[in-house]
Length: 213
Image (cartoon, rainbow, N blue to C red; front, top):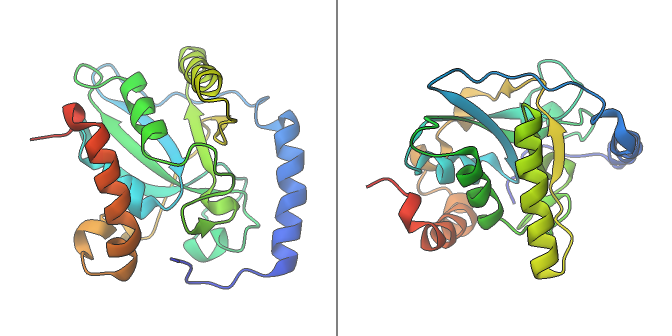
């Protein structure tokens, strides 16, 4: 596993109480903030380790840039160490800058659901904990409707419960420099070889029509 910091039992218990309060509707009561412009849009996804997810979205046509960071919590200026205490409420998140004339938000969602274990709660693969939970952030009601429609379709067709939470986008915090382009910069890292690469290959097999030449 990728964990570099020790998470304490009390921290986990405290987070669980916070998460229960948040799931009761407080997040949904917040008004989403839109950062999209006419020709360049941004989207925000949490789907386990951002080392894995960053590489997946960087390979897509129409995607200009992907940045790893944190979102979904209430703590300002979170760091990797703080997020791993499970006290911040944040999850490892990516910011996807893309050209909507080349790839749609709906396409990005298809990749999101098609590149993870959609019913795994609080983690992806070997990475477990609320900091690795799946979250889709929406910036307006149109995006929220698209997200909910896809979730309903997946659940009805596969007879399962989608684990991804749906939050209004409020703030994205950029992660430390060494996390950016981690897969590309560290091809021989054991986590990249054993976790990121297999996940990427599985995604690539499903979405060949959306991958850059």
